[in-house]
Image (cartoon, rainbow, N blue to C red):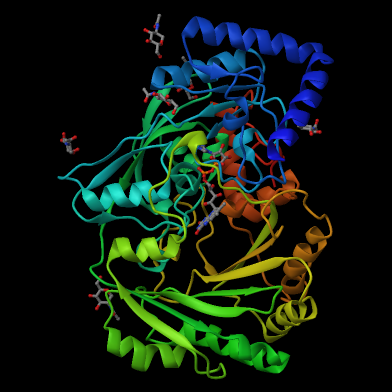
Length: 510
Ligand SMILES: Cc1cc2nc3c(=O)[nH]c(=O)nc-3n(C[C@H](O)[C@H](O)[C@H](O)COP(=O)(O)OP(=O)(O)OC[C@H]3O[C@@H](n4cnc5c(N)ncnc54)[C@H](O)[C@@H]3O)c2cc1C
Ligand SMILES: *[C@@H]1O[C@H](CO)[C@@H](O)[C@H](O)[C@H]1NC(C)=O
Ligand SMILES: *[C@@H]1O[C@H](CO)[C@@H](O)[C@H](O)[C@H]1NC(C)=O
Ligand SMILES: *[C@@H]1O[C@H](CO)[C@@H](O)[C@H](O)[C@H]1NC(C)=O
Ligand SMILES: *[C@@H]1O[C@H](CO)[C@@H](O)[C@H](O)[C@H]1NC(C)=O
Ligand SMILES: *[C@@H]1O[C@H](CO)[C@@H](O)[C@H](O)[C@H]1NC(C)=O
Ligand SMILES: *[C@@H]1O[C@H](CO)[C@@H](O)[C@H](O)[C@H]1NC(C)=O
């Protein structure tokens, strides 16, 4: 079924490309350049094309013109300059999990630099900085860091997500209230710029590029290696979860329970940075809460902290389990193992549309917005399917909000809750039912229409394919960050070689 879809897509593409003379000129130019420079590459006639051009989100399948698989930094330079000289747009591919398939170009006919050969992971035992190749995936990184001196990083739970896209655009996980985002651990980057120049960017050298890469990496260069300051892995992680479905029985109940949880997160001295809180709800009526308490006392958490967290919810079944670091990560990634194949060896998929909302600490959700959201969830049971994950990024002790908003292009440093609203297909495969899109839009609208006077932004790593360039600039960066990025872009990539539909430069100054 998937095979025949690919065959059909390839046939359509061959027809459309041969009908477009500028494509075939660009195609022969780039192929000739890459062959001269000895850079491994593939096009639609290659036997491994279907595997190489694979996307995670099957709702948004794009056909690149060429995929380059460099093995050295010089070959990354050559990949970029060959593609740019042929007038092609370039996007690197790390783990390939971009919600909008930007690592396949976000349009047909782009040049993709597949970084799968950049896979080393080395912890310097003096500085405890890990040098990580940009083709790696989160699960492999976690295992290698732990093997090299029980080191760790904060990052998401899905082991197949690439370190590159994740770290460059945020990177939230259950350790983030304690340790910040993955992005906050970047101390240096080896980057190849649009003109092919190789640089080592830090706080002190190539400051502007270092600022821009952390939050807008897709628009400024290709990272070959990350230098990430690691943390000591905690010896104990408490994983807690409770089924809160009984609270969904009435809108009054769930509104007051959620509002109580928000007040608790903002005011209780129990909510140290060691604690993470996340809620999950969906179109089948599920409601659960789960999270971690790192290096916490099991009895105190179970008997004092957890009951206080759930005080507003009707009694429900719950568990608290104590793990070591790697077992905690393994249980979160289940049924997938932490160890994942690189490049096109990885074949997980979904077919989905997602949006996000970032609610601010200084403007918590109003009672009206909370009621509006849960009313919408209850009113749309049995439709979709969709789910919402609501993660606590804020509260007084959260490390996510410590860096200043001017310290990197990731400027969202007043986050309280991050909502991910996600519509998908039951079997994860196409066809996507387009009636899911307005349902997901409605989840966002339920909050934005009722949260009067609030500033709500969006989370870069849940990139929303349906935003216009101007909306993306506004929701992901805001005027001061976007306008600074625009001037850096004009300096280092004036021809807009690094391009996707929402890249810096597609919207004028805000
Ligand atoms: C199943 C799943 C679970 C997820 N869980 C979480 C989670 O728990 N927490 C969270 O914060 N996010 C999560 N995400 C979102 C995830 O962080 C983003 O999708 C992330 O950007 C994916 O990175 P990638 O390298 O896999 O993606 P890619 O698609 O390869 O890259 C994403 C973007 O980064 C660019 N890029 C890739 N490599 C480079 C490079 N070397 N240099 C410069 N730019 C580059 C690409 O061009 C693209 O624009 C999840 C996503 C999925 C699909
Ligand atoms: C891009 O290519 C795909 C696959 O060949 C095709 O289905 C789609 O229509 C193309 N999109 C555009 C905008 O040309
Ligand atoms: C081209 O690359 C291959 C492997 O990537 C290598 O074996 C070969 O020596 C290279 N040839 C030249 C001329 O650089
Ligand atoms: C690069 O990746 C390809 C595909 O995974 C693999 O066959 C090749 O051996 C890799 N090259 C290096 C130098 O690791
Ligand atoms: C570790 O980092 C220090 C300080 O930057 C450096 O001097 C040393 O060479 C590094 N060690 C290795 C093995 O790279
Ligand atoms: C949080 O973790 C630290 C260790 O990193 C530990 O010393 C502290 O006691 C923990 N706090 C709570 C409230 O458990
Ligand atoms: C490439 O671009 C960078 C950033 O703008 C610049 O510093 C460098 O001089 C340029 N290199 C060349 C060879 O033009």
